[in-house]
Amino acid sequence: MTVLITGGLGFIGSHTVVELIEQGYDCVILDNLSKTTINVLEKIESVVQRKVSFMKVDMLDIQAVRSVFEEYDISAVIHFAGFKSVGESVKNPLVYYRNNLISTLNLIDVMQEFNLKKLVFSSSATVYGDIHTPPMKEDFSLQAPNPYGRTKLMLEEILSDLVLSDSTWSIALMRYFNPIGAHKSGLLGELPFGTPNNLMPHVLKTASEGTSKLQVFGGDYDTMDGSCIRDFIHIMDLASGHVKALEYIDKNSGCEAINLGTGIGYSVLDLIHTFEEVNGVKIPYEIVNRRDGDIIVSIAEVGKAEVLLGWKAKYNLADMCEDAWRWYKSIKKLN
Image (cartoon, rainbow, N blue to C red):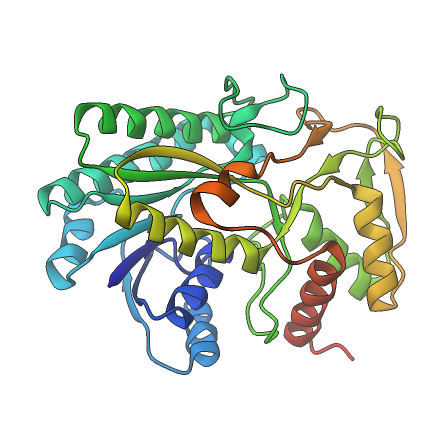
């Protein structure tokens, strides 16, 4: 079975490619290299010990997308490609709407041309907004709080409507929470472009440099220690969840939204202290003012993934911190 992975050189995409190949799938990676580098392909190939098919394609160009399907006999698609910075989406909403929506519509159009109707879509827990009491369940009403989240919500609705119009489609909408960690080889990890939007890259930078303090946004929330709470999930658990979703859509039609998380909430300070303990490094930090738009508590209800996919996260926060630091030290040549 040959799987097309769009955005396959990104953080989640690259780790999923490794997991797919290790589970016996053939992979074709599509990426426009706007948020990553071709070096990631070399790292993937080093991990799996084989060449992996790759095409540099901008998905806003529908003919370029079509050329991938003309060259390869694709059996299913996992669609990661898209812009994902919340802050950037607020500053440049039209860029996000144009890129994330049109690229996905182009993909769907080409899939229909080739009568290929199996799709795993990369969504986000952002679609739940801040209007529910955790844990977040798939049947909750949705209300994305920013343009990035709204692109995910709009695309979920488009894909749901598509299935209503044609029941032969099989689509999994994967809503994942906060992926961190790295591949245990130390060859693959999260290498953000520009200013990092996620917590772990800032933790890693602070741990390696030790010259400035990590900013913790808000210490007065109604939580156990005053900091925000997140459902952190190891990147390899997330990757295995996508493989399980692929197995599911191969046997079932329809459209299902599925959370991928641990079901456990860790505070920002939990992560900092766990990182310090397992890696033997100090993370100097300071509590600063709350950040606009931050959700206080975000935790996944994970029962549906267990029932439908037979999937459950197996790594804990210590594993995530240890693997992330091993990878970061390898790229920074730290002792």
